[in-house]
Image 1 (tube, rainbow, N blue to C red):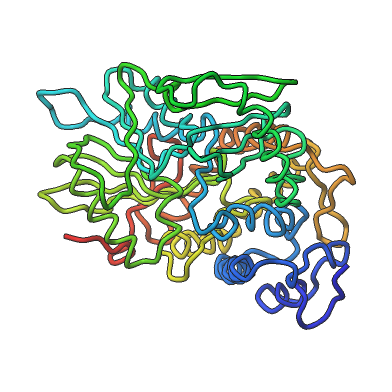
Image 2 (image 1 turned 135 degrees about the vertical axis):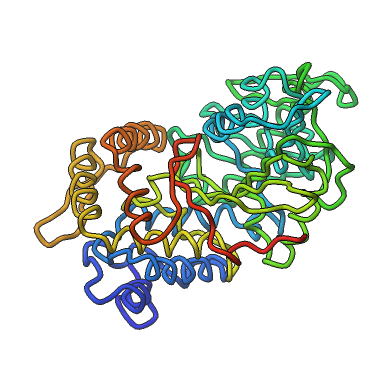
Length: 440
């Protein structure tokens, strides 16, 4: 265990969040063992926690696990400087519903949806094509791996046309944490599986999909062709090089956060060129379909105007990390969300019953309990990720059904924000002037 001293994570947390770090968590995260960019992320997380009024007593093993293993595993430095194509089915279901419910200007042709940074395998884009069958859908990413290898547990790895390892992603089932905890061994295991399965392919030059299997492990060549449908096509391109696509709606999630503010603005300007007047851009982040935050821009007289900033209710929870996750300083989304969170946490008539009810549900569903000392205590055996996600979704449905989303909207309204529940069911506000910079 890392000693409790002035260079420890505990001391850093106390610097930002106040004294009294939970002693039962001491030593659970070793800062010196993390890569420099992960340590920078942690410092930004703590600064934003302070800004949002997050209490030190709510710090817990789930946050420690995110910071110690998951966050370092999704940073570009873990993948040779490349943005990892993280994705999971159903992640953007609410945003698909948001678009489906919009009243777009009348068009003489087919409506077009462009999913920029769709990830690979492009399961979220396929979800959108199914949800919007009358639309033409385009999935855009800078690269689509030539080979995908699934192991017996559903974890997968991507390889390029030369058979070089690119990326792995754990499933939400058993063993996912172990893959991130030992990335070197994980990569080597997938390389060995690839070497064993590749010779079974009949023809590596085929343009159609081909699958070979041995002992429950599957290697798929040209997997991207398995996802194309009559209304779904894929384009391999960087944002700045994308050929013009007159789009009714564009989604760009978990992409812009990897770039500095200036580059984000350049990308927004380029994306805006693809939108028809009256079209919408949804840009932001989420994690496995939870803890979403995003801005909604509208193309108006050739200008990209930010008309809405929205976030899901679970961003206010004790076990959330995404509200404060940012790779660069001066990120407008996380800064605004921190201010909104502080406003909500500072209003006792809402926050006291919200926090009390959340504690009750966390204990009822087996996540953790609030001890007599005010800190959160978890069972010795942590939930498997798929169980965690399932119970987490149920918990936040219950919180939503109790009216806490509307309560947060009312709280923000009392503080002077124009707020509402948007078509995705998330808390939305009209962004204060100057919050988001966009090219005219």
